[in-house]
Image (cartoon, rainbow, N blue to C red; front, side):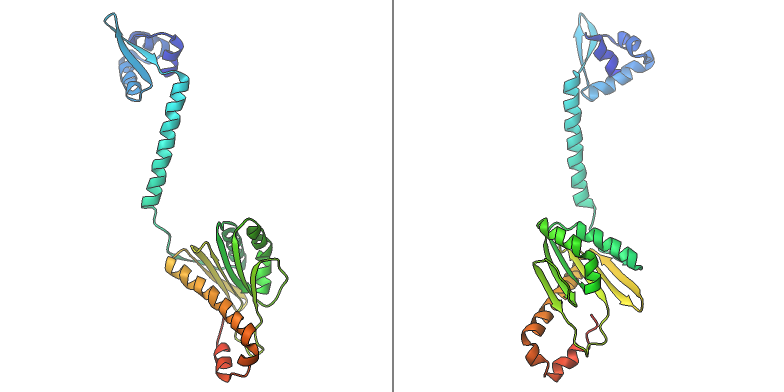
Length: 239
């Protein structure tokens, strides 16, 4: 109906609207009323006859654009108010799934990445980690074993021969808001993924525990290697 009234290029009565648009006369006033309510038509009285004129196309486009933008902002507010953070703990059961999810999580990083892993596990993520660092993301990495890398913040932990109970693992915390932690059990991998604020903080601290332990090992190794109490404690570590 809007197009029909617009094409008339002059104010028209309801009867003419029905003819131009093909809308049945019984429905024409109902449709006109809806268009008036939406601000798409003008109405006026000329020579005691009620006539209608369509809003120009450019003005209609501007009106609809503003309305659409307003609705987007309202949806954003609804999302902020009603969608609660997902603080559940999820499990991933295969090495392939863990690797794929971890890559996607690293790629999504906007500010920070904390990653601690065995060297052979770490190598799979290294190219993407170096790329994220070039993009301005702060990457802090800790590796069990040694490897070559251009990462600026990288520390290595070389296990002692007596640390025979260590298990292969990875701990990845992104933007301080999500963690994927995975460990080996025999030849299989098991993992948890969560955005729980409390658990993310725990695994972030777990990462810095690794960094601190490595710092102490490197700086005071010549002393600690003769401390039986320390060696007894460190040999109890699993990760």
